Image 1 (spheres, one colour):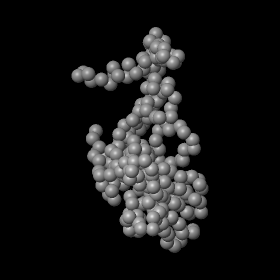
Image 2 (cartoon, one colour):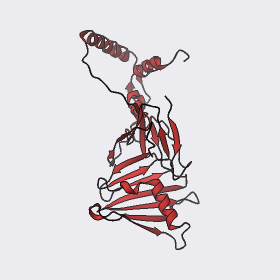
Image 3 (cartoon, rainbow, N blue to C red):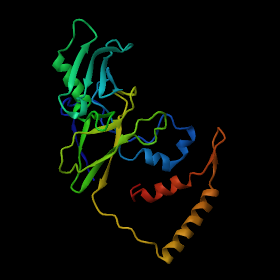
Image 4 (tube, helix red, strand yellow):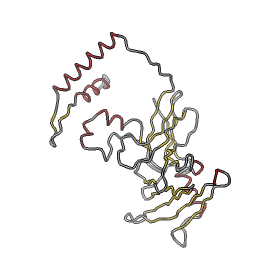
Amino acid sequence: MEVRLYSNSSRPGVGLKPRRESQRPLLPQHARHCPVLEAGSALGLLVYPPLEPNESFHIEYEGEGRYQLTYFFNTEGAKWEPVFTVAIVLPIGSIGMMKEEVYFANKTPPISRDTALGVMRALVVPEDLGTPPGAISLRGATNFKTPAGWDTVYTAIFNMIERPVAPMLVVRVETDWYAHETEFRYVLQPGEGIHGAHNMPIGQAFFVPREEVRLAECTPEELAAIQTSREEFFHHKASSKIMTPYGLEYSPHYLRESRSRNTGPDG
């Protein structure tokens, strides 16, 4: 199965390509010996924002329909300097126009107001702000076109355990025919914000076939085979335990069995 990639329409070619990553920085060391946990983390691809290495941003929900996005630039490689801030005020009761005010950090702005708003719109989707209250949609650097019959699921990054973690609205899009611009919609509380950087993923995307799943009860023969398989697995697991240098005992049997079953005849 092949998925085609194309860039963020507002900033083509900017940002890291999606990639698969099985490790998470804040998980304990023993997670490296849990293949099912790492397989969950590696499901699909991490998606990055459309930023250059010397760019970053921070968006905050201030409450009562007010948002603030600050764009930073690092020219010397040592200090991040704010370039501009966009204050967004949503209409009360969804009636009226959304207000966008641009404030520059320097008296002689390096870019125009329209350019600043264009950068902001390349990073977030202003029209999605406040739906529901506190919601923000972060744009990805890369979009996906799936084969016929396959959808893309956009979700938060799996197995990120640091707190607090903003909840996210998971969506599934039929990207085989719909040209969907990748976005991840988080929901913030007043005072909360999200930071975006070149090498910091903003979400995870994976691909699923669009087919019906039917459920059926196992037959007695299948149940007996499952029980036999379970007993054999735990027997082999118990006989292949390893002690790590830092005192953790684990068994590599599941990983070895998985590799043997998923490795083709050519190795």
